[in-house]
Image (tube, rainbow, N blue to C red; front, side, top):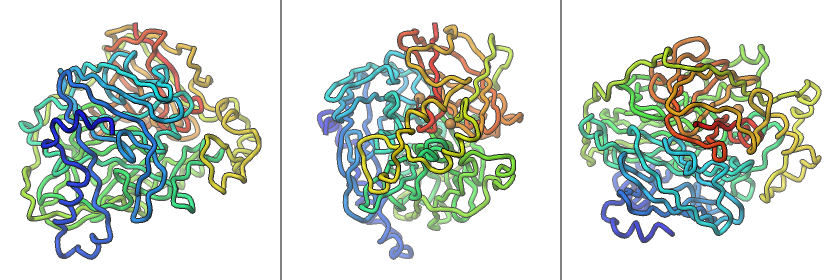
Length: 525
Ligand code: C2O
Ligand code: CU
Ligand code: CU
Protein backbone atom coordinates (compact mmCIF):
# COMPACT_ATOMS: atom_id res chain seq x y z
CA UNK A 1 0.00 0.00 0.00
CA UNK A 2 1.49 3.27 -1.09
CA UNK A 3 0.19 5.18 1.91
CA UNK A 4 2.19 3.03 4.29
CA UNK A 5 5.01 5.49 4.77
CA UNK A 6 2.76 8.35 5.75
CA UNK A 7 0.49 6.11 7.77
CA UNK A 8 3.12 4.53 9.95
CA UNK A 9 4.18 7.91 11.31
CA UNK A 10 0.91 8.42 13.03
CA UNK A 11 -0.37 4.93 13.33
CA UNK A 12 -1.47 5.60 16.88
CA UNK A 13 -3.99 8.11 15.58
CA UNK A 14 -5.54 5.74 13.14
CA UNK A 15 -8.26 3.25 13.44
CA UNK A 16 -7.41 0.45 11.11
CA UNK A 17 -10.33 -1.29 9.48
CA UNK A 18 -9.38 -4.47 11.30
CA UNK A 19 -9.19 -2.74 14.67
CA UNK A 20 -12.56 -1.11 14.30
CA UNK A 21 -14.06 -4.38 13.14
CA UNK A 22 -12.73 -6.19 16.19
CA UNK A 23 -14.15 -3.52 18.43
CA UNK A 24 -17.54 -3.75 16.85
CA UNK A 25 -17.64 -7.52 17.11
CA UNK A 26 -16.57 -7.57 20.74
CA UNK A 27 -19.28 -5.17 21.78
CA UNK A 28 -22.39 -6.58 20.18
CA UNK A 29 -25.18 -6.39 22.77
CA UNK A 30 -26.37 -9.79 23.92
CA UNK A 31 -29.97 -9.34 22.76
CA UNK A 32 -28.92 -8.98 19.14
CA UNK A 33 -26.05 -11.43 19.28
CA UNK A 34 -27.71 -13.90 16.93
CA UNK A 35 -28.60 -11.43 14.21
CA UNK A 36 -25.34 -9.57 14.59
CA UNK A 37 -23.22 -12.70 14.51
CA UNK A 38 -24.35 -13.23 10.94
CA UNK A 39 -23.82 -9.58 9.99
CA UNK A 40 -20.44 -8.27 9.05
CA UNK A 41 -19.14 -5.36 11.11
CA UNK A 42 -19.33 -2.09 9.20
CA UNK A 43 -15.91 -1.55 7.61
CA UNK A 44 -14.43 1.75 8.78
CA UNK A 45 -11.99 3.05 6.16
CA UNK A 46 -8.50 3.94 7.33
CA UNK A 47 -8.31 7.60 8.32
CA UNK A 48 -5.50 9.63 6.80
CA UNK A 49 -5.26 12.74 8.94
CA UNK A 50 -3.41 15.03 6.54
CA UNK A 51 -0.98 17.58 7.98
CA UNK A 52 0.05 20.84 6.40
CA UNK A 53 2.79 20.22 3.85
CA UNK A 54 2.96 16.44 4.41
CA UNK A 55 2.39 14.35 1.29
CA UNK A 56 -0.60 12.03 1.07
CA UNK A 57 -0.17 9.08 -1.27
CA UNK A 58 -3.12 7.41 -2.99
CA UNK A 59 -2.84 4.49 -5.41
CA UNK A 60 -5.62 3.44 -7.77
CA UNK A 61 -5.14 -0.28 -7.99
CA UNK A 62 -6.61 -3.66 -8.80
CA UNK A 63 -7.39 -5.84 -5.86
CA UNK A 64 -9.87 -8.38 -4.57
CA UNK A 65 -12.55 -7.76 -2.00
CA UNK A 66 -15.18 -9.54 0.07
CA UNK A 67 -18.52 -7.75 -0.22
CA UNK A 68 -20.47 -10.30 1.76
CA UNK A 69 -19.68 -13.46 3.64
CA UNK A 70 -18.56 -15.28 0.51
CA UNK A 71 -15.22 -15.39 -1.25
CA UNK A 72 -13.21 -12.38 -2.36
CA UNK A 73 -13.86 -11.27 -5.94
CA UNK A 74 -11.90 -8.99 -8.31
CA UNK A 75 -12.25 -5.32 -7.40
CA UNK A 76 -10.47 -2.02 -7.58
CA UNK A 77 -9.72 0.36 -4.76
CA UNK A 78 -7.73 3.42 -3.77
CA UNK A 79 -4.88 2.21 -1.55
CA UNK A 80 -7.42 -0.36 -0.45
CA UNK A 81 -9.24 -3.45 -1.71
CA UNK A 82 -12.41 -1.47 -2.44
CA UNK A 83 -13.15 2.27 -2.09
CA UNK A 84 -10.42 4.28 -0.39
CA UNK A 85 -9.22 5.73 2.87
CA UNK A 86 -11.02 8.70 4.40
CA UNK A 87 -8.73 11.69 3.94
CA UNK A 88 -9.24 14.45 6.49
CA UNK A 89 -7.77 17.84 5.63
CA UNK A 90 -7.85 21.10 7.57
CA UNK A 91 -8.97 24.32 6.00
CA UNK A 92 -5.95 26.61 5.76
CA UNK A 93 -3.52 23.77 5.06
CA UNK A 94 -1.73 22.96 1.84
CA UNK A 95 -1.61 19.26 1.16
CA UNK A 96 0.59 17.74 -1.56
CA UNK A 97 -1.01 14.62 -3.01
CA UNK A 98 0.73 11.82 -4.86
CA UNK A 99 -1.80 9.92 -6.96
CA UNK A 100 -0.50 6.80 -8.63
CA UNK A 101 -2.36 5.03 -11.43
CA UNK A 102 -1.67 1.30 -11.09
CA UNK A 103 -4.55 0.39 -13.39
CA UNK A 104 -4.01 -0.67 -16.97
CA UNK A 105 -6.11 2.18 -18.33
CA UNK A 106 -6.14 5.95 -18.10
CA UNK A 107 -7.77 7.58 -15.14
CA UNK A 108 -7.97 10.87 -13.23
CA UNK A 109 -8.80 11.66 -9.61
CA UNK A 110 -11.34 14.43 -9.10
CA UNK A 111 -11.80 16.11 -5.72
CA UNK A 112 -15.58 16.40 -5.71
CA UNK A 113 -16.51 19.42 -3.56
CA UNK A 114 -13.08 20.96 -3.15
CA UNK A 115 -12.92 24.64 -4.09
CA UNK A 116 -9.58 24.67 -5.86
CA UNK A 117 -8.29 25.93 -9.22
CA UNK A 118 -9.17 23.84 -12.26
CA UNK A 119 -5.61 22.75 -13.00
CA UNK A 120 -5.62 20.54 -9.87
CA UNK A 121 -9.34 19.62 -9.96
CA UNK A 122 -8.81 16.15 -11.41
CA UNK A 123 -11.35 16.47 -14.21
CA UNK A 124 -11.03 14.76 -17.62
CA UNK A 125 -8.15 17.06 -18.60
CA UNK A 126 -5.96 15.90 -15.68
CA UNK A 127 -5.42 12.47 -17.19
CA UNK A 128 -3.00 10.03 -15.51
CA UNK A 129 -1.69 7.32 -17.83
CA UNK A 130 -1.26 3.72 -16.63
CA UNK A 131 1.80 3.62 -14.39
CA UNK A 132 1.78 7.40 -14.13
CA UNK A 133 1.85 9.61 -11.06
CA UNK A 134 0.02 12.91 -10.56
CA UNK A 135 1.18 15.31 -7.85
CA UNK A 136 -1.31 18.14 -7.34
CA UNK A 137 -0.82 20.47 -4.40
CA UNK A 138 -4.17 21.33 -2.86
CA UNK A 139 -4.59 24.58 -0.94
CA UNK A 140 -7.59 23.91 1.23
CA UNK A 141 -9.61 26.98 2.10
CA UNK A 142 -13.32 26.35 2.53
CA UNK A 143 -16.02 25.58 5.09
CA UNK A 144 -16.10 22.30 7.01
CA UNK A 145 -17.94 19.66 5.00
CA UNK A 146 -17.90 16.09 3.69
CA UNK A 147 -16.57 15.64 0.17
CA UNK A 148 -15.19 12.79 -1.90
CA UNK A 149 -12.78 11.84 -4.62
CA UNK A 150 -13.33 9.63 -7.64
CA UNK A 151 -12.00 9.10 -11.19
CA UNK A 152 -13.30 11.32 -13.98
CA UNK A 153 -11.72 10.01 -17.21
CA UNK A 154 -13.51 11.01 -20.38
CA UNK A 155 -16.18 8.40 -21.14
CA UNK A 156 -15.03 5.86 -18.54
CA UNK A 157 -16.05 7.30 -15.18
CA UNK A 158 -19.06 5.03 -14.57
CA UNK A 159 -17.13 1.78 -14.93
CA UNK A 160 -14.21 2.93 -12.78
CA UNK A 161 -16.36 4.26 -9.94
CA UNK A 162 -18.56 1.17 -10.10
CA UNK A 163 -15.49 -1.01 -9.71
CA UNK A 164 -14.65 0.63 -6.39
CA UNK A 165 -12.63 3.76 -7.10
CA UNK A 166 -14.00 6.38 -4.69
CA UNK A 167 -13.15 7.70 -1.25
CA UNK A 168 -14.40 10.24 1.25
CA UNK A 169 -12.64 13.50 2.06
CA UNK A 170 -13.46 15.50 5.17
CA UNK A 171 -12.66 19.19 5.33
CA UNK A 172 -12.40 20.22 8.96
CA UNK A 173 -12.20 23.73 10.38
CA UNK A 174 -11.49 22.53 13.89
CA UNK A 175 -14.76 23.98 15.19
CA UNK A 176 -16.99 20.91 15.52
CA UNK A 177 -16.22 20.27 19.19
CA UNK A 178 -17.40 23.79 20.03
CA UNK A 179 -20.50 23.26 17.91
CA UNK A 180 -21.37 20.19 19.97
CA UNK A 181 -20.99 17.83 17.02
CA UNK A 182 -19.51 14.32 17.37
CA UNK A 183 -15.85 14.20 16.33
CA UNK A 184 -14.52 10.71 17.18
CA UNK A 185 -13.80 9.14 13.80
CA UNK A 186 -15.29 5.68 13.43
CA UNK A 187 -16.92 5.88 16.86
CA UNK A 188 -19.54 8.65 16.80
CA UNK A 189 -18.44 10.33 13.54
CA UNK A 190 -18.93 7.60 10.97
CA UNK A 191 -18.41 7.59 7.19
CA UNK A 192 -21.33 5.93 5.39
CA UNK A 193 -20.72 5.34 1.68
CA UNK A 194 -23.88 4.06 0.01
CA UNK A 195 -23.89 2.10 -3.24
CA UNK A 196 -25.98 -0.44 -5.12
CA UNK A 197 -24.49 -3.35 -7.05
CA UNK A 198 -25.30 -6.24 -9.28
CA UNK A 199 -23.29 -9.39 -8.67
CA UNK A 200 -22.87 -11.98 -11.40
CA UNK A 201 -23.41 -15.71 -10.94
CA UNK A 202 -19.73 -16.11 -10.09
CA UNK A 203 -20.18 -13.59 -7.27
CA UNK A 204 -18.14 -10.93 -9.05
CA UNK A 205 -19.26 -7.36 -9.65
CA UNK A 206 -21.19 -7.20 -12.91
CA UNK A 207 -21.11 -4.00 -14.93
CA UNK A 208 -22.63 -4.73 -18.32
CA UNK A 209 -25.04 -1.88 -18.95
CA UNK A 210 -27.73 -2.41 -21.55
CA UNK A 211 -29.08 0.47 -23.60
CA UNK A 212 -31.83 0.76 -20.98
CA UNK A 213 -29.23 0.98 -18.22
CA UNK A 214 -27.39 3.72 -20.07
CA UNK A 215 -30.56 5.68 -20.59
CA UNK A 216 -31.92 5.36 -17.06
CA UNK A 217 -28.61 4.99 -15.23
CA UNK A 218 -27.23 1.68 -14.00
CA UNK A 219 -28.94 0.44 -10.86
CA UNK A 220 -28.07 -2.56 -8.72
CA UNK A 221 -30.19 -5.05 -6.81
CA UNK A 222 -27.90 -5.32 -3.77
CA UNK A 223 -27.16 -2.48 -1.37
CA UNK A 224 -23.73 -2.03 0.17
CA UNK A 225 -22.30 0.31 2.81
CA UNK A 226 -18.56 1.01 2.82
CA UNK A 227 -18.18 -1.97 0.50
CA UNK A 228 -20.09 -4.45 2.69
CA UNK A 229 -23.47 -6.10 2.23
CA UNK A 230 -25.82 -5.50 5.18
CA UNK A 231 -23.17 -4.71 7.79
CA UNK A 232 -23.80 -3.85 11.44
CA UNK A 233 -22.19 -1.01 13.39
CA UNK A 234 -21.82 -0.74 17.13
CA UNK A 235 -22.53 2.82 18.28
CA UNK A 236 -22.57 4.71 21.58
CA UNK A 237 -25.92 5.22 23.33
CA UNK A 238 -26.24 8.89 22.37
CA UNK A 239 -26.01 11.10 19.29
CA UNK A 240 -23.92 9.83 16.40
CA UNK A 241 -22.93 11.75 13.27
CA UNK A 242 -23.24 9.86 10.01
CA UNK A 243 -21.44 11.38 7.03
CA UNK A 244 -23.59 9.94 4.27
CA UNK A 245 -22.31 9.88 0.69
CA UNK A 246 -24.34 8.55 -2.20
CA UNK A 247 -21.58 7.03 -4.36
CA UNK A 248 -24.00 5.00 -6.50
CA UNK A 249 -23.76 5.38 -10.25
CA UNK A 250 -27.38 6.34 -10.69
CA UNK A 251 -29.74 5.48 -7.86
CA UNK A 252 -31.43 7.98 -5.58
CA UNK A 253 -31.88 6.65 -2.06
CA UNK A 254 -34.79 7.63 0.17
CA UNK A 255 -33.22 7.13 3.59
CA UNK A 256 -35.06 6.46 6.81
CA UNK A 257 -34.80 4.26 9.87
CA UNK A 258 -36.74 1.04 10.20
CA UNK A 259 -38.67 2.37 13.23
CA UNK A 260 -39.29 5.70 11.44
CA UNK A 261 -37.47 7.62 14.17
CA UNK A 262 -36.68 11.28 13.42
CA UNK A 263 -33.10 12.20 12.60
CA UNK A 264 -31.38 15.54 12.12
CA UNK A 265 -29.64 16.92 9.06
CA UNK A 266 -26.72 19.12 10.13
CA UNK A 267 -24.85 19.52 6.84
CA UNK A 268 -25.34 19.29 3.09
CA UNK A 269 -22.76 18.86 0.30
CA UNK A 270 -20.70 21.98 0.82
CA UNK A 271 -21.17 22.97 4.44
CA UNK A 272 -23.07 22.87 7.71
CA UNK A 273 -26.64 24.10 8.00
CA UNK A 274 -27.52 26.94 10.37
CA UNK A 275 -29.18 24.48 12.75
CA UNK A 276 -30.21 20.82 12.76
CA UNK A 277 -33.22 20.07 10.54
CA UNK A 278 -35.49 17.28 11.76
CA UNK A 279 -36.58 14.80 9.10
CA UNK A 280 -38.02 11.29 8.98
CA UNK A 281 -36.82 10.54 5.50
CA UNK A 282 -34.14 12.06 3.32
CA UNK A 283 -33.69 11.69 -0.44
CA UNK A 284 -30.01 11.58 -1.40
CA UNK A 285 -29.04 11.68 -5.08
CA UNK A 286 -25.81 10.39 -6.66
CA UNK A 287 -22.89 12.64 -5.69
CA UNK A 288 -24.75 14.26 -2.79
CA UNK A 289 -23.58 14.22 0.84
CA UNK A 290 -25.55 14.82 3.99
CA UNK A 291 -24.27 14.87 7.53
CA UNK A 292 -26.97 13.67 9.89
CA UNK A 293 -27.22 13.17 13.64
CA UNK A 294 -29.05 10.10 14.91
CA UNK A 295 -30.14 9.63 18.50
CA UNK A 296 -29.40 6.09 19.69
CA UNK A 297 -30.04 6.84 23.36
CA UNK A 298 -33.01 4.44 23.54
CA UNK A 299 -30.46 1.63 23.20
CA UNK A 300 -32.56 -0.16 20.59
CA UNK A 301 -31.02 -1.71 17.47
CA UNK A 302 -32.36 -0.10 14.32
CA UNK A 303 -31.81 -0.46 10.60
CA UNK A 304 -30.97 2.21 8.06
CA UNK A 305 -33.20 1.53 5.07
CA UNK A 306 -34.14 3.09 1.77
CA UNK A 307 -37.47 3.45 0.05
CA UNK A 308 -37.82 2.91 -3.69
CA UNK A 309 -36.20 5.33 -6.11
CA UNK A 310 -39.27 7.20 -7.28
CA UNK A 311 -37.17 9.19 -9.73
CA UNK A 312 -35.84 6.17 -11.57
CA UNK A 313 -36.42 5.89 -15.25
CA UNK A 314 -38.08 8.01 -17.84
CA UNK A 315 -41.76 8.52 -17.38
CA UNK A 316 -44.66 9.58 -19.47
CA UNK A 317 -47.21 11.71 -17.63
CA UNK A 318 -49.08 8.58 -16.70
CA UNK A 319 -46.03 6.88 -15.25
CA UNK A 320 -45.26 10.00 -13.28
CA UNK A 321 -48.68 9.86 -11.67
CA UNK A 322 -48.09 6.29 -10.60
CA UNK A 323 -44.96 7.27 -8.75
CA UNK A 324 -45.25 7.24 -5.02
CA UNK A 325 -44.35 10.15 -2.82
CA UNK A 326 -40.94 10.01 -1.11
CA UNK A 327 -41.18 8.40 2.29
CA UNK A 328 -43.65 5.72 1.20
CA UNK A 329 -43.32 2.27 -0.31
CA UNK A 330 -41.43 -0.91 0.43
CA UNK A 331 -37.97 -0.57 1.91
CA UNK A 332 -34.62 -2.30 1.51
CA UNK A 333 -32.05 -2.48 4.29
CA UNK A 334 -28.61 -0.89 4.07
CA UNK A 335 -27.29 -1.77 7.52
CA UNK A 336 -28.01 -2.12 11.23
CA UNK A 337 -26.92 0.01 14.17
CA UNK A 338 -26.46 -1.68 17.54
CA UNK A 339 -26.19 0.79 20.44
CA UNK A 340 -23.63 -0.42 22.94
CA UNK A 341 -23.98 0.77 26.55
CA UNK A 342 -20.29 -0.01 27.10
CA UNK A 343 -19.24 2.81 24.73
CA UNK A 344 -19.50 6.16 26.44
CA UNK A 345 -21.58 8.65 24.48
CA UNK A 346 -19.76 11.96 23.97
CA UNK A 347 -22.81 13.83 22.68
CA UNK A 348 -26.15 13.41 24.44
CA UNK A 349 -27.86 16.62 23.37
CA UNK A 350 -28.78 17.96 19.98
CA UNK A 351 -26.76 21.09 19.23
CA UNK A 352 -28.87 24.19 18.56
CA UNK A 353 -26.95 26.69 16.47
CA UNK A 354 -24.23 25.38 14.09
CA UNK A 355 -23.31 28.48 12.16
CA UNK A 356 -24.74 31.61 10.64
CA UNK A 357 -26.02 31.20 7.13
CA UNK A 358 -27.17 34.28 5.24
CA UNK A 359 -30.07 33.76 2.88
CA UNK A 360 -29.05 33.79 -0.79
CA UNK A 361 -29.24 37.16 -2.49
CA UNK A 362 -30.81 36.83 -5.93
CA UNK A 363 -29.92 40.41 -6.76
CA UNK A 364 -26.21 39.62 -6.66
CA UNK A 365 -26.52 37.74 -9.97
CA UNK A 366 -25.08 39.48 -13.03
CA UNK A 367 -26.22 36.85 -15.54
CA UNK A 368 -28.83 34.17 -15.99
CA UNK A 369 -28.40 30.98 -18.03
CA UNK A 370 -30.62 28.02 -18.81
CA UNK A 371 -29.29 24.48 -19.18
CA UNK A 372 -31.51 21.64 -20.38
CA UNK A 373 -30.34 18.14 -19.43
CA UNK A 374 -31.61 15.74 -22.04
CA UNK A 375 -30.91 12.00 -22.35
CA UNK A 376 -32.62 11.75 -25.74
CA UNK A 377 -31.50 14.68 -27.84
CA UNK A 378 -32.66 14.38 -31.42
CA UNK A 379 -34.17 11.02 -30.68
CA UNK A 380 -37.50 10.03 -32.16
CA UNK A 381 -39.93 7.60 -30.59
CA UNK A 382 -38.87 4.90 -33.04
CA UNK A 383 -35.32 4.91 -31.84
CA UNK A 384 -36.45 5.14 -28.26
CA UNK A 385 -38.50 2.01 -28.83
CA UNK A 386 -35.37 0.24 -30.01
CA UNK A 387 -33.62 1.32 -26.84
CA UNK A 388 -36.48 0.06 -24.73
CA UNK A 389 -36.24 -3.36 -26.32
CA UNK A 390 -32.97 -3.66 -24.52
CA UNK A 391 -30.29 -3.45 -27.16
CA UNK A 392 -27.25 -4.28 -25.14
CA UNK A 393 -24.56 -1.67 -25.01
CA UNK A 394 -21.31 -3.49 -24.49
CA UNK A 395 -18.40 -1.64 -23.12
CA UNK A 396 -15.14 -2.35 -21.45
CA UNK A 397 -13.15 -5.51 -21.06
CA UNK A 398 -15.29 -7.07 -18.31
CA UNK A 399 -17.27 -9.99 -19.52
CA UNK A 400 -20.15 -11.90 -18.07
CA UNK A 401 -22.02 -14.64 -19.86
CA UNK A 402 -25.21 -12.58 -19.97
CA UNK A 403 -23.47 -9.92 -22.03
CA UNK A 404 -23.19 -12.19 -25.05
CA UNK A 405 -26.85 -11.51 -25.73
CA UNK A 406 -25.99 -7.93 -26.67
CA UNK A 407 -24.16 -7.31 -29.84
CA UNK A 408 -25.31 -4.88 -32.49
CA UNK A 409 -22.56 -2.31 -32.98
CA UNK A 410 -25.25 0.17 -31.96
CA UNK A 411 -24.19 0.90 -28.44
CA UNK A 412 -21.94 3.23 -26.57
CA UNK A 413 -21.45 5.35 -29.68
CA UNK A 414 -25.18 5.69 -30.25
CA UNK A 415 -25.79 6.57 -26.63
CA UNK A 416 -22.99 9.12 -26.80
CA UNK A 417 -24.88 10.90 -29.53
CA UNK A 418 -28.10 10.91 -27.57
CA UNK A 419 -27.25 12.57 -24.31
CA UNK A 420 -26.39 16.17 -23.94
CA UNK A 421 -27.02 19.58 -22.45
CA UNK A 422 -28.80 22.24 -24.49
CA UNK A 423 -28.87 19.84 -27.41
CA UNK A 424 -25.14 19.18 -27.56
CA UNK A 425 -23.19 16.17 -26.33
CA UNK A 426 -19.99 16.77 -24.34
CA UNK A 427 -16.93 17.82 -26.30
CA UNK A 428 -13.61 18.17 -24.50
CA UNK A 429 -12.47 20.77 -27.02
CA UNK A 430 -15.49 23.05 -26.63
CA UNK A 431 -15.98 25.63 -23.88
CA UNK A 432 -19.70 25.90 -23.30
CA UNK A 433 -19.82 28.73 -20.79
CA UNK A 434 -17.37 31.45 -19.76
CA UNK A 435 -17.97 33.27 -16.50
CA UNK A 436 -16.18 36.11 -14.79
CA UNK A 437 -14.06 35.40 -11.72
CA UNK A 438 -15.61 36.81 -8.56
CA UNK A 439 -19.14 37.16 -9.95
CA UNK A 440 -22.44 35.48 -9.23
CA UNK A 441 -24.96 34.04 -11.69
CA UNK A 442 -28.33 32.31 -11.63
CA UNK A 443 -28.39 29.04 -13.53
CA UNK A 444 -31.73 27.50 -14.31
CA UNK A 445 -31.42 23.75 -14.78
CA UNK A 446 -34.18 21.90 -16.58
CA UNK A 447 -34.53 18.15 -16.70
CA UNK A 448 -35.95 16.38 -19.72
CA UNK A 449 -37.46 12.88 -19.54
CA UNK A 450 -36.39 12.10 -15.96
CA UNK A 451 -34.82 13.61 -12.84
CA UNK A 452 -31.10 14.41 -13.13
CA UNK A 453 -28.65 15.22 -10.30
CA UNK A 454 -26.80 18.29 -11.61
CA UNK A 455 -23.28 18.92 -10.32
CA UNK A 456 -20.69 21.66 -10.86
CA UNK A 457 -16.95 21.60 -10.23
CA UNK A 458 -15.03 24.40 -8.54
CA UNK A 459 -18.05 26.12 -7.01
CA UNK A 460 -20.68 25.69 -4.38
CA UNK A 461 -24.16 27.09 -4.78
CA UNK A 462 -27.45 27.76 -3.09
CA UNK A 463 -30.74 26.45 -4.41
CA UNK A 464 -33.15 29.33 -5.06
CA UNK A 465 -36.05 27.18 -6.18
CA UNK A 466 -36.77 23.60 -7.12
CA UNK A 467 -39.95 22.64 -8.97
CA UNK A 468 -41.06 26.25 -8.55
CA UNK A 469 -40.87 26.10 -4.77
CA UNK A 470 -38.23 27.23 -2.28
CA UNK A 471 -35.88 24.36 -1.37
CA UNK A 472 -36.78 22.28 1.67
CA UNK A 473 -34.76 23.21 4.80
CA UNK A 474 -32.28 20.32 4.41
CA UNK A 475 -31.38 21.65 0.95
CA UNK A 476 -31.25 25.32 1.78
CA UNK A 477 -27.54 25.41 2.70
CA UNK A 478 -24.45 25.14 0.50
CA UNK A 479 -24.62 22.48 -2.18
CA UNK A 480 -22.75 21.24 -5.23
CA UNK A 481 -25.35 18.75 -6.47
CA UNK A 482 -29.04 19.42 -6.98
CA UNK A 483 -31.56 16.76 -7.96
CA UNK A 484 -33.63 18.41 -10.67
CA UNK A 485 -37.00 16.78 -11.31
CA UNK A 486 -38.40 19.50 -13.50
CA UNK A 487 -36.53 22.77 -13.09
CA UNK A 488 -34.34 24.32 -10.45
CA UNK A 489 -32.68 27.69 -10.05
CA UNK A 490 -29.29 27.88 -8.37
CA UNK A 491 -27.23 30.90 -7.31
CA UNK A 492 -23.58 30.22 -8.13
CA UNK A 493 -20.53 32.27 -7.20
CA UNK A 494 -17.43 31.80 -9.35
CA UNK A 495 -14.46 32.28 -7.05
CA UNK A 496 -11.92 29.87 -8.52
CA UNK A 497 -10.17 30.36 -11.84
CA UNK A 498 -10.39 27.96 -14.78
CA UNK A 499 -8.69 28.66 -18.08
CA UNK A 500 -10.21 27.62 -21.39
CA UNK A 501 -7.39 25.06 -21.67
CA UNK A 502 -8.27 23.51 -18.31
CA UNK A 503 -11.96 24.20 -17.75
CA UNK A 504 -14.27 23.07 -14.93
CA UNK A 505 -17.06 20.57 -15.64
CA UNK A 506 -20.78 20.67 -15.00
CA UNK A 507 -22.73 17.49 -15.53
CA UNK A 508 -25.40 15.04 -14.56
CA UNK A 509 -24.03 12.83 -11.75
CA UNK A 510 -25.81 9.77 -13.13
CA UNK A 511 -22.45 8.45 -14.28
CA UNK A 512 -23.82 6.74 -17.39
CA UNK A 513 -25.32 10.06 -18.45
CA UNK A 514 -22.09 11.92 -17.74
CA UNK A 515 -20.04 9.41 -19.76
CA UNK A 516 -22.45 9.58 -22.66
CA UNK A 517 -22.48 13.30 -23.14
CA UNK A 518 -24.53 14.99 -20.42
CA UNK A 519 -21.63 17.23 -19.43
CA UNK A 520 -20.34 20.66 -20.34
CA UNK A 521 -17.28 22.76 -19.65
CA UNK A 522 -16.95 26.25 -18.20
CA UNK A 523 -14.08 28.65 -17.90
CA UNK A 524 -13.78 31.21 -15.11
CA UNK A 525 -11.63 34.16 -16.14
CU1 C2O B 1 -18.40 13.82 -8.54
CU2 C2O B 1 -17.60 15.78 -11.96
O1 C2O B 1 -18.00 14.78 -10.22
CU1 CU C 1 -17.16 17.26 -8.84
CU1 CU D 1 -28.94 12.47 -16.01
